[in-house]
Length: 221
Image (cartoon, rainbow, N blue to C red):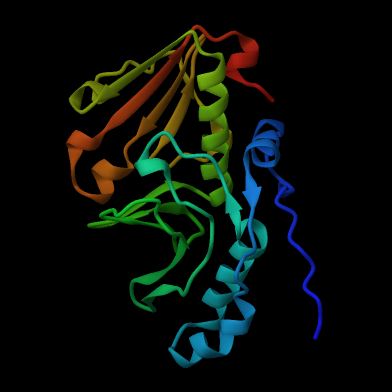
């Protein structure tokens, strides 16, 4: 009987992240044993899952599988553990890969889209970030902003649409699509539009405004 090497609970951040996100993953995250996609490959192919989609699921699992991160500030705290599962979809509509179980019972799931986007699938698809890296960067930035902001304001519904973003620049590292972050002179603004789009529920629009930030607070690596 071959002994199994224990998995270290301390994760190593993958390449390509900002230093802020690397610190977040390695300090705030926990690595748990992840399920292997390769051992299920033949069974999935028999179910009609294209090999290319299994390869995508495997690549996600190699980079992010088994990583548990602190609760997200929206989306009912985000997935409990990043973990790929059997791809869903068809050749006509495209394929989505489940990205991890929800922490509570919800009307949508966290998925990796046909183009590698990280998003939620409810009544319809809402790609939040262009990649899972962007999702992790957004979590790291939210944690950093909460730590250093002098004021935090939560705005919901129609008031979100009236926010004046003149003079703000979009934060590129979060790779925002439906969700975006904006950086001003002393303020960071996170716009959460995913539930409004994915559930066709405009009342679910939400913005978090972090004020009173200095240069370190605005960037943090």
